[in-house]
Length: 170
Image (cartoon, rainbow, N blue to C red; front, side, top):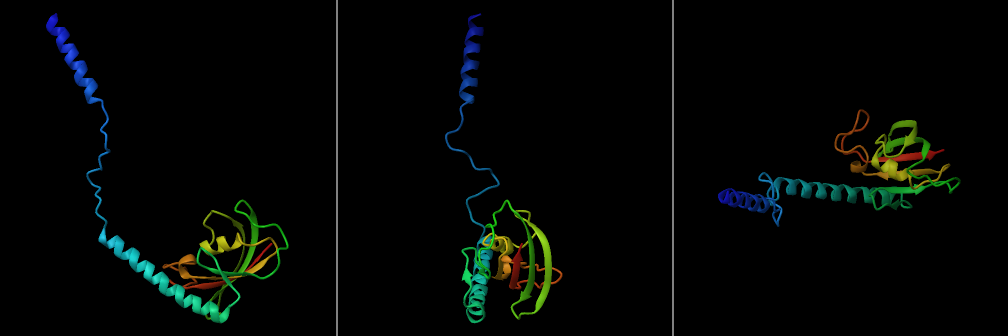
């Protein structure tokens, strides 16, 4: 019986010491702290491409639309008509009509739609630009390719195409 008590005490000590959490979390075996050189290279290359296109677009705006302001997001805008209505917020649903042009002022398309924010139904810059407006306003947005239709483009728009939106909001 004495041996049985000693064995029970030994087992309790073993189990209680095995349940302690390690002090430092251990990295998974398939994860390392080494940065992938290809990821770094592509990030650097993308940054250089965007900087190059931004300088070209800045020159274009300066010569063709000198009164436009640049947003922190990276596109240029001008609200044409005054603040005739309520400021548009993300929870609003608004009727939008726009005409889309390339930088050579060639008409690409016109569209009229009901805008729902946060649903990815429009380009990033158009959504952000609408949030600068009031109902009843019209505006011009000059948008770099990476905030418009990106590297893929679409049926009407070639990849890497910067665009001009002429927008009216009801």
